[in-house]
Length: 341
Image (cartoon, rainbow, N blue to C red; front, side, top):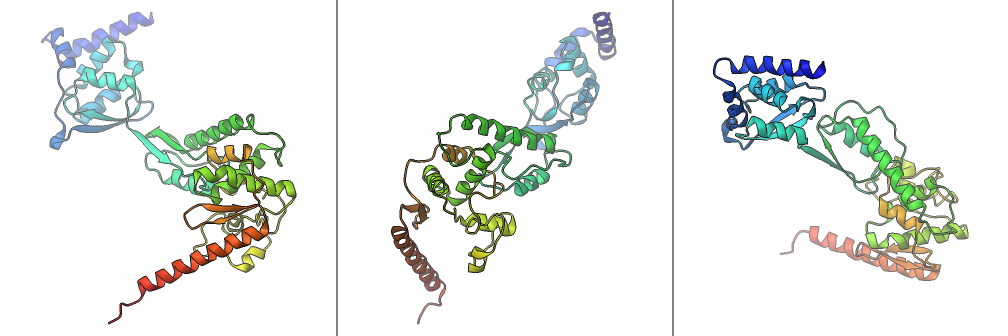
């Protein structure tokens, strides 16, 4: 019965579209080039919201002047039995594309895609803010993801994707990565839960931007945990003060000593939650840290760090870094001074 009704509807539409000029005209027009884009553009952007039926799709295409006749488009799509195969989305319709070509584009779902790139070490609050502000996403953010529960990555989506759906993807991707890496972890790590691993990975993420250093930085913190030493990580102080918002200045001595749940100069072990969202490489680093006896590291002036396994060597390295800082400060002062006569 359904197939009979469908065939009957096709005949009705064809009869209206064809009139007295004959069915061959319909097929000719369905495969003939469409209108040229206005103002000489090479394509026209057409948005087809989710839930849009064939009639509204055809009307929209005609209104946007990418087809000559909505009736011709409807008749052709129904003849090929593709009415339910057309996909919603935002499409760049090439100038002069035939109705047949447009139908194929909508069947294949070749819609315009958008990207949102989340840098490793970004906080959850900043991620939610970026999602809220992205103009191609729809709906409000009703989810409240925890710190460290989202995976920094480049996400691709179509216009109209809901904000909650994208955040849920980020959360699911994070869970998948943690589960994948957890089963490959080395034995005898000084933590026992996945959340603790992510917490330590977030600290590693904030401590170094050099990818090759991550396993060695992770080893420093793993070694400290094993020895019962405080982690003494500056980014944890900042998170305890501002939830990760940069201070815009150096950390004060009073802040080093200020007790917060996150100040690893004061507390023992790991802070209660991650301090950011670590990427896959940092999670992998803490689950498979480098085999070293390092306990300290300090900046080396090149963007990386120099490591030490004892306090005396570390203090020498710190003095070298202080000297670099003084030289840079002096150079900055000289470059900003007025030139002499």
